[in-house]
Amino acid sequence: MSIIENIVGRYHVNTPTEKVVAAVMRKVKPAARKAMTAEHRTALETRIRKAHEDNRALYTSVMGGI
Image (tube, rainbow, N blue to C red; front, side):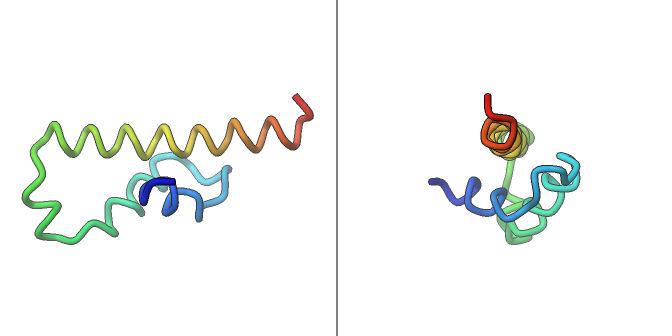
């Protein structure tokens, strides 16, 4: 499990994705955020969204019996 998955996993699956992205980005140290290129920031936000969507899919699978 990656650090991103670990942090994202602390949020309920019904938390809006943008709220999770913002919360995780706030955990990145200011100096690291400042050093990020636009490409790095986009890649990180994409990984956060994917991790949250994967959690939703797992929840649906488990609770829905799929």
